[in-house]
Every structure is written in C-alpha cells, then in structure tokens.
Image (cartoon, rainbow, N blue to C red; front, side):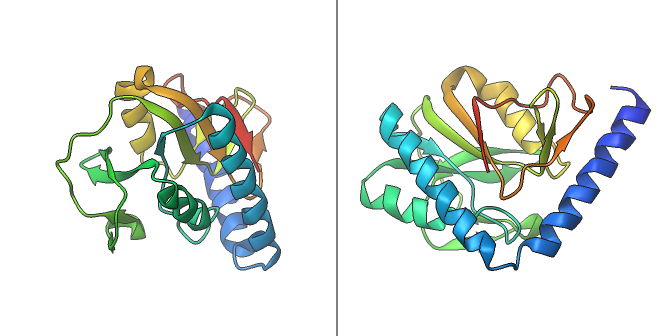
Length: 183
C-alpha cells in the first residue's frame, strides 16, 4: 500500500469511528445488536461450533454480552483476546474482566492450554473496502494474530452495527478477510 492509500485508509477509519461514536448511544442500536446476536447464534448452531473466539465489546461495538452468557450456559469454550505487545493471544473467557489499554476489557492472564482449533471467530470491524478486508481500529492486533493462527480458524465473521464500505481498495494484503459480514 502506498502513502496515499494509507492516508485514505486512516481518513476512512476516522470518519467511520466518528459516525459510530455519534450513533452508539442511539436506542435503535440495542435492537440491531439483538438481531446480530441472534444471527451469530444461528451460525454457532449451524456449524456446531464448540470453540469460539470473540471480543469483549467497547461501547461503539456490537454488544455481544448476551451471546457470551448464552454460550457459557451451553458450556462452549469461549476464548477472548489478551493483549501482549503489538498483538494478543487467546485466553479462556472468565470473570472478572479487567480494563486495559485503549479501554479494552479482558479476562485475567491465563497460561492455560487452549484447543488449537477455533471453530468460529467473531471479529468487530470499523469498516471494510471493496475487497471485504477488515478496517479496524488501526493497531493491527487482529492482523498479527490471524497471520499466525489462520490455519487454526474455521469460520470468521465480521460484525458491525453499520456497514461502512470504502468504494476503493484501501486495505493491505495482510488485512484479514471474513467468510461472513453481519450488520
């Protein structure tokens, strides 16, 4: 990607984040979140996912906490990011959560062995471009993680309350792609 594309990507990201912040307090998003959670649960059932990678939502992201609760009750293996340096590793989701850098909540550090294969990865997005690759928050953590783990991940689903798509290619080859996008 050249410098102009990088600048375009950063401008696109900033515009999307501004829209998300402005609208995230709107009550209609609670209904959208419920719809997205229902669709995610359908995918879990259809593919018979047992090991699920997900995220702990920020205020501007789809609130998947009801899905987490349901999956925990069903004794699914739920894995969440635990930040380490410029990337993260997955740890078993467990309470209490602690707030870390960037306001992100995460489970406590765990050296527990995790299953190598992940049936379903649920990934938040800020936007995407015509290639359907992820535009995230700009830290590259998911890209670094997926680069190392992509052969161990079955299905990847991007989720967002609103789908923002740039009409030109602004992503890099290493930006992750999804099998599905739910909005």
